[in-house]
Image (cartoon, rainbow, N blue to C red):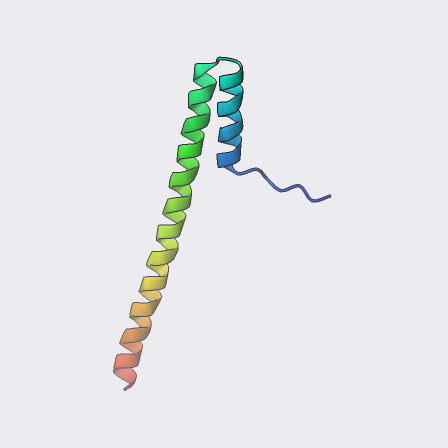
Amino acid sequence: MIHMPLSDDVKGKAKEVKGKATDDKGKELEGKAQQAASKAKDTAKDLKEKAEDAFEGAKNAVKDAFND
């Protein structure tokens, strides 16, 4: 059986739900914060990939301009 690591978003949601179920506001807020951090990390990763793609496109355009 293959075990997939849980994402920080899923772990955060579990903490949030556990906090709500046990009336533990600290755990609930910790879960929400972990989910927000996970989303921020995913957004940063997406932006990095887009910047890398844009850089490659610009580099290729310059190469093409000099090769023509």
